Length: 312
Length: 291
Image (tube, each protein chain N blue to C red):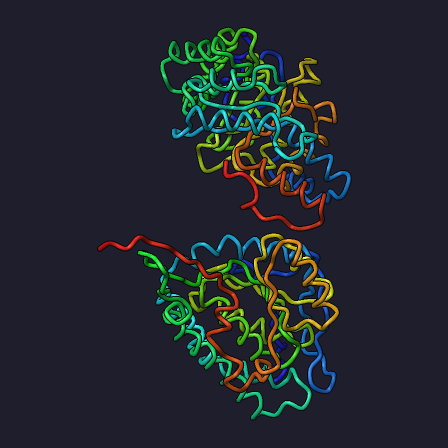
């Protein structure tokens, strides 16, 4: 990890993490390309396929203080069969909850293909004592979580203490054991695309199985440009080291249209090899209903009414 | 100053409180008296219908949740703002129709403004007239109250351009419904100018949405939309109305059309509290009576 110190050079210079180059980001070009990819029109059978894929890569999420075991159970039922009336609609990829509710979700999803994901590590700020954060990660895994979403220590990262941020992710990865580790960068707090790219590289080198945009707990969440920036970082990582890291987009993704814009961005940047639940996820709570509404529209030709779909 | 360039207004659709071009990017020429080109209006698409219904849907709860008195104030405010732009409406009506005189235009504008005032007055009264306490054979209070039906699609007739639109719109929104209006296909410009006054009259965004374009294209997606609760097909010809009613039936959407008497737009028969009732559902409540 000696090379990591090379990161601690003034911002703007081409620097490196463990031998991986971090190139500066052309912000204008990035936003222009992201905007262009979002204008693509997707119709009929392609639309049906995109909606189907959006469900298969979805992390159905509930992260509220008011989450009850019953609510999580209901969510798990929806996760297995998103459309109660049509079981040909695929299951979502995972259900994402707070650690305390992991046992409930694990029991409800036993013998189903749906994974249990848990946020942990002092979510959403990530500023609990390191021991407590690692214990939370280990606890969640022991309780049955297949995937753990931790947050990057932005306090360390933004103050230039990259080694500390890196070491914490390495420690979390160890605490995770067999479970998949997703590292939330909280891109809305990082300040620039250069920082997002640097944080992406740092998390990937430290051993993240997925890098994730946001907690959904602050105003600025996933945007097309941020998704493209992170997808390009993943592409560079794969090209330079052969290591394939997954991408999870979360926060503010509410409509099916947004979802297929992101599918286009990932497909165009990383190729169709990334358009699977193993390498791509959409974290969302209200997206599923909109996708189901669009599917119903495709099937019977009528625009649908939100009230006819579930409340949660 | 004689060589000053003309500054012409772009007549856009009114969706969710914003003036927007069509999602489809299309427009169509609108001709007035003497086949003179007046402007290009937006030629809306089914996607615009979808967006307008979504806007109407999300605005409906809070609009119905306002006090009747407040809705009355806001309808009266529409009349006030129209009054201050009366000359503009007169000019708009005058140039839209063949054979329309200045006196006709002035009369129609005045009648349209007065119609808002008339329905504004009904806002906190119609529930008393249309609902009430029912005598029942048992120890209960039995009360009926009219409640707004939800989202109403209104197809305005072609002519005249302003008064029929106001006559059909005001009774729909006064009770707490929200509306998606297809303006007159032949003379849509006055409707867009009306939208501008609505935007300045404290009518919340999404309560009234006004689309322009081809009825043949816009009525079917509006009629078949599951989130539309009631339809006013006054502006449809018999064939289109029948097709729309068939589509509406599949989702139990109430269909209404103006009677011959109501189509005498300038006279009092065109305004009635029963028109408010046509877009309400009656809720009846039983309550045990104490001694």
